[in-house]
Image 1 (cartoon, rainbow, N blue to C red):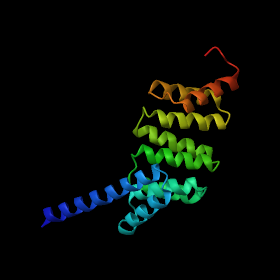
Image 2: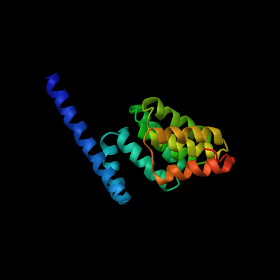
Image 3: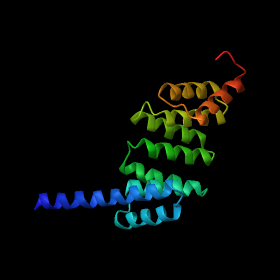
Image 4: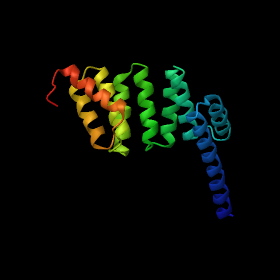
Amino acid sequence: MTGRHNLQFDLESERLAQMVEEGSRRFQSGDSEGANTIWRSVLDEDIEHPGALHGMGVIARDLGRFEVSVELMRRALLRDPRNQSIHNNLGTALEAWGRYDDAITAYKAGLRWSPKDWVLFNNLGSCFARMGRRANAISAFEKALRFGGDTAELLTNYGATIADTGDFGK
C-alpha cells in the first residue's frame, strides 16, 4: 500500500512540475496571462508549490507589486531553499523596491547554493553600484566575468562602474 501511495504522489508531483514548466514557457514567450492561469491552477492543488509561487512572484514583480512579489518568493524559498533562481528573483524584486540591503542578502543567499552563478554576481554588483559601493560592485562583476558571464549588460555594468571610479587602469 505504501509503494502505491508514493507512486501516486510522485506522478502528481511530476504533473504539477510539468504544469509549472508550461507556465514558465508561456511567461518567457510573453504570455504572462497564460502563465498566471497555469500557476494559479497549480496553487489550487498545492498552495505552497515553490515553482508556482516563484512564477507568480516574478509576475507580481514585473507589475510593480513588490510587497506581494517578495512574500510569494519567500514562501517559495521555505519549500525550496536551495533554488538560486528564486533567491535571484527575490533579490531583483527587493532591489526594484529600493530595499538594497535585503536584495544583497538575497543574492548572497543564492550564492551559498550556487557559488559560481555569474547572474547572481552580476545582480549583486549592480545592487552594490546603486548603493555607491563601487569596490564591492567591481569585485562582484569580476567574479561574474570569471564564472562565464559575458553579456552586454554585465560588460556595461562593469565598465560604467569602473568609469564612475575614475580608475581606467583596469
